[in-house]
Length: 383
Image 1 (cartoon, rainbow, N blue to C red):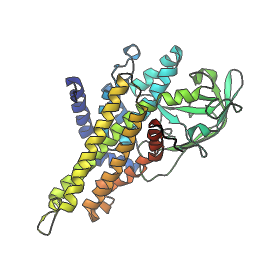
Image 2: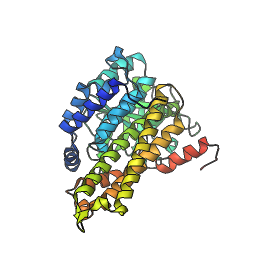
Image 3: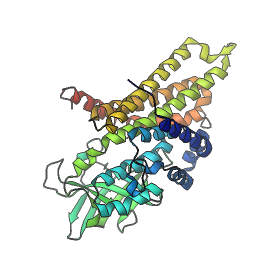
Image 4: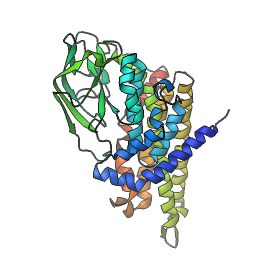
């Protein structure tokens, strides 16, 4: 059993770490979050290093790398912040789903822009009445011959407010069909008449931002239908395994950075004449955290390997996402405890980690949903 990375993968990791040090070290990522900005140089830099082309075939200007390579980049960017990693993850998840189901004309239309960093995709599933129960969505696209007439309300659409972003939106195209049927994937341009994108104020994750999207009589051309009409549920499910691999990579990276920051402080801060990290009450939690980060990393790369080999890994993806997200939350909470009053200051990096971590067990599938899926894979009827 070989747990090592190839020389090419090690070089990719080294390059990604240098990129974070140069372009978006944690203090810079924190400032971007506080300023609510997503600098163009972030996407330009990722495109220049061919990271945005990693999963795509060479025929479209891509690199044809696998899930492990993408997870490496997600992990290293996570050392800056999870939101920085999401700048990489979010567009690739939607871009790969579009590529997988698109016809050739659509691939030529959408994919080169994603690879160049000039165009991004945001995914839109959630609605006011459809969160974890994604199939309950009601935004309706009525067939009008050469176009769909789209009406409804979407929420938690991450990145939809950035320039050059298209929305890969799951909508209902058949109101008479059963709940998980009659759904379709449409590419919606926020610049279309009748589309309104409103930022949602949040505790953190301000670099990409998340949004409500209101749709009123939006005319979406038929050529923006990706995948079979009424088969959107299958389209949606097809991207979940890659999504969970990449999210887990980001969580591993930011959890490791948080442990490193807590450890550095524990070695420097002295009380009662000694470094606070030498007290067993803090040394043991740090040891536990490092163990859990390593376990989360192993779960992530096991799933990445399985996905790269074409093996089913829905359960493994849920395990990686569940454990990675909860490890980040735990690391940030202990980091705050170890930093004490300094961590409570909004000037500290640890306060930023804490704010950002809170949503990790909610976004991208809640911990409860992940546990339900794992339980069902074990033959348990779980609701």
